[in-house]
Image (cartoon, rainbow, N blue to C red; front, side, top):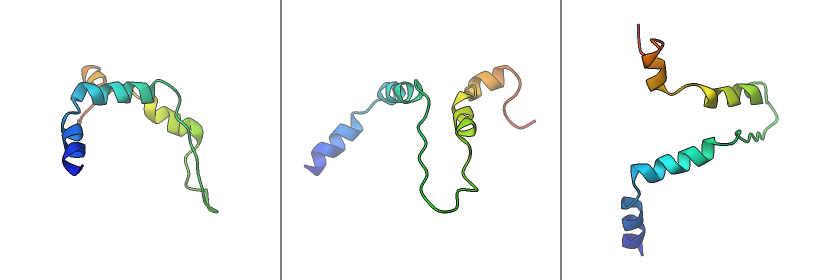
Length: 68
């Protein structure tokens, strides 16, 4: 059984991962927080903005990425 699971993991391609990532990022994120001190928790808008940033490639082409 372990060998079967490992074989399935090894069979995952980069395209498989990209497909999952595209699906996950196609809708706004969900946010759930548990605890009594929520002062350090970012707002929903902040979390959403993290996923709306352009990919690093686009930033590099626009001259905004990397260390300058």
